Length: 424
Image (cartoon, rainbow, N blue to C red):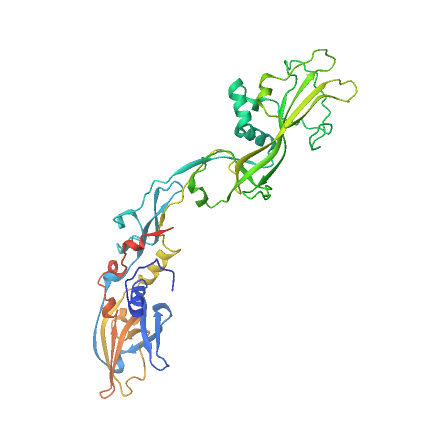
């Protein structure tokens, strides 16, 4: 057999449920084997069923009343269905198998807006997100300058873009900060550098903590640059962690440039920053470099989100939909076509045999030799067999049982609105 779309049933018996499934596989026969205890119900397909060939010339056949059902043979199956794209818009697709040249085309709409009287909202909320790697020191420096209230206030008050200041590290082994860097401060003669010489705002170290103050690994993760994440962001297939980023940010400028008698003072905005630590009047010990360097810094703690997916450029993400449309299982069109691309027959064959019941026809397909040519290979399905032991009569009924006696292939598969969408 093969996978079929979801079907919805009301309060039904197991027999009714099985009958609905058999609708989807028209080349089947259902029969009972009463020789087992308890009796066994069997569902056989035409392709693997045993063939029973009855020879008309033997005289066993006393009556034949059968006819082909040419309007039940299918040469092409088309399954239109609907999917959603990432923005929540409906996208129409189709699964098809076979040729339409004969006009015997079965079109079964698997899903689509037209099958429901009411569908939830199709317009999805969206949000633009961008991230930087936790290994991107320059990017994180700029992120801190954007998020830290002290730098924001100073930038607004003095109309300064601190992110344009040279990125590097003011933290040397001679400073009071942890010795994360070594620096010689060469090439800092101040030529064309203005009143503050070569100026740097830089980052030193980065860790993360959760709401309980416990450490959170930042290895291989990304920091979300965009703020005010929507409430539905956790519904995405990526993992967001709300953390507090902790690190040191420092500022350096040359109070006195090499070979210069000019002493520079801290800039005006310097007074707007609550420096936690600093080393003033530090002088480079490198031969020939008499630059006096002032270093200030403090430990910041800002809230941020870590995410396990990178969005290197601004990316629009959409809120997951409340529902999705049903899609046909793989190869369903080909399987339905194979189950119907043959000419079915219906009617009765009556046999008179000395050993009535010696040959059983249940679960078999039937051919008749030495009569019409097409009957020799018809492979007709057996709906039922009746035995009259007293008179030695066997009546073989071909076709579908009354419950499944659909007159056209369109009637074989029924859809309900419940089988159109699935809530997520």
